[in-house]
Length: 350
Image 1 (spheres, rainbow, N blue to C red):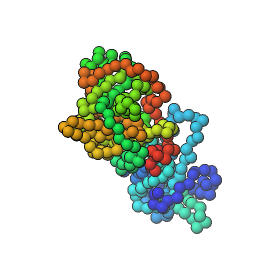
Image 2 (spheres, one colour):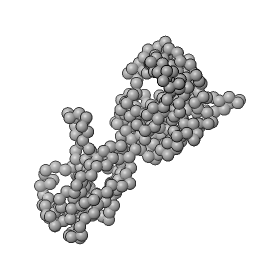
Image 3 (cartoon, rainbow, N blue to C red):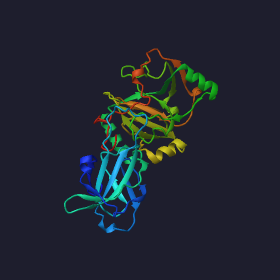
Image 4 (tube, rainbow, N blue to C red):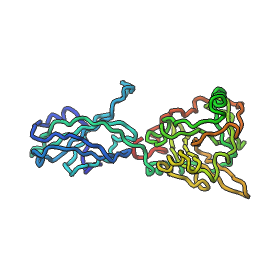
């Protein structure tokens, strides 16, 4: 909470007790800085005239209207923050209204509290727009710790696999010299995830059926499956990162992991933004050596979505049709995270 400020919803009854006088300086040249996923600093300039009469600042904070938003959906209540006049810049932090990666508008008034409790206020400043930041490593580590709680025991696996339609693989062979190319990750998962819409990679699965130890024959992503030996993607020459933890109003949860060849552009991107995991010892995906052979395990109780950040040549594996069904309901493409789930949400944002 900012400077012990109280937060009040702005409405007519509240504004009715406020008298307007032009003597108080109007804030101008507003600057927003030090933006995180749930805080920012705000400063402005104002004329020195009557400056010593200022006792409070009113900050009007609103989510920016989305032109594509459903007009019948409940609208967020515009929020006016009443803060004691403190030296600028002033920090706004830990407010329920602030979510990661969200556009806001902000305007400021200066105010002087009177003996009777009413305020004399300046005119509103100009309206400034800004966007909050993604989750930091600190927030992602909180998500990681929540995911570890439900990951379950580890099961052996030997291959990564990727399902697509036949046309996808035909296109790769014809237009990309047989190599699957990384593409920008969609906006599925946590709203504050730093990899959504930014990280380039190729999605793979590694889940196995408990009774067979092999990949399931069903898939939501297409009837053709590329399979590749685990050691060709995940080995001592790659780094492993935790990317996200989410659910889609379901009982089962998803964990996104990123595998990046050491020193690659994907590795540099992740090193700055994501918690790195020990490839030999973590709760989700491990690569260990037994008798000179690399052995692989994955967590049983979460669905792992693995992003590999470099191109992958189809000649390194095999493409074949699956015998099961295409379960479209399990697709996570652009899926929105359930903001009410206590298992996979942290206190900041959504």
